[in-house]
Length: 117
Image (cartoon, rainbow, N blue to C red; front, side, top):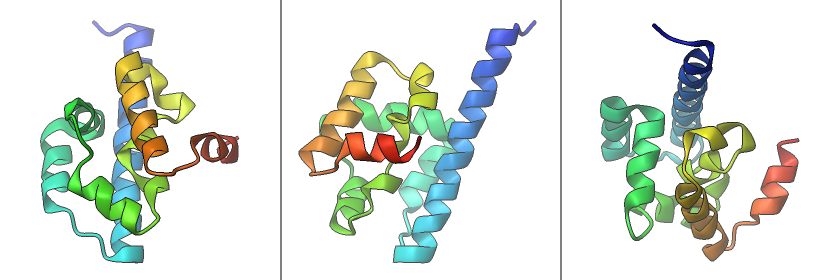
């Protein structure tokens, strides 16, 4: 039996997944970003599961580097992870990793978060 809190988390996971896919489609249209491995990872693990896997690695992914080079880090999984509404889906360590990766690549996390308000 699912509890109301379980239902809320399931809905939040679905929103994260949907936003992950919408972001990917946006990147396909704007910079012709074709990331088959990323799509496969999301298809197999869902958006949150793919994010967990990406945040476990010691270095940024090739896709992150591509987005950094294109000045599109606002559309990275890491940027999605640090959105306040998605914080319940991730551990403090994962949130710190996402934030650190963004900051290390010159992304203004605070301005980004302020723009979401």
